[in-house]
Length: 150
Length: 110
Image 1: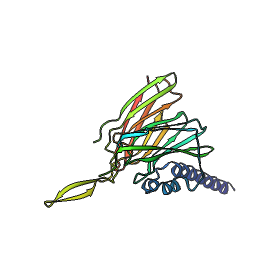
Image 2: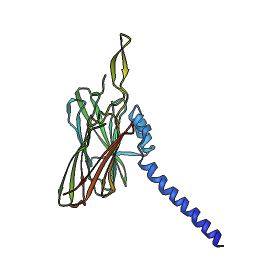
Image 3: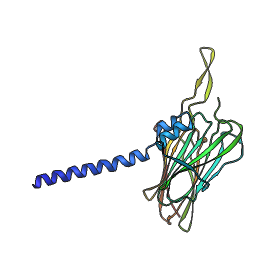
């Protein structure tokens, strides 16, 4: 009996440990397939598995209307949506639209600033994942000099 | 060897402002260059070389992670804010690129 119990306990422990290891790995690993995607739909499908994405005016996507140099376009994303988990940046017209993805953990204010490259004028999308769902907003940026060409 | 990460941390109360500049070519792998081979000019792709992942920890606890592509600008900058940071806390930042190279730094917050 005690043998059986300990075996059960070990099995349970193993199952729990495997589950613990598997969840963060799956949820947090860099999604190489999404980064290779040639269009937004493919990148979104790979990242969000077909989950519904709702347009939201509670995401502030701060990009210039006109960027003189496509190699350096300032982007700031912030949101007042509660339970922020990830912010994903996509440049619709780039050869690989997925540009960067940020995961926010406890303590982070819901705001991130970086600089991205744009091959030409394009819509820039910010997709925000929260504990309530997936939300997005977009803005058009006109680029005078592209940043991805040969 | 890649250059060191430049960082400016400023704490106001328990809110930390982090401004980082990470020197890196961030080559997307889609650009072409002209090379002379056997006396003839040919075009070839410049191989991808960019930061893949970035992590920021406060006292060993992850607060921000980033996955990047080569379309983040050369020498990526990141600005972000972390709550609940006190004097003496240790902030570490680290990147890994697609060639497996890494760079990190650790700062003690004043």
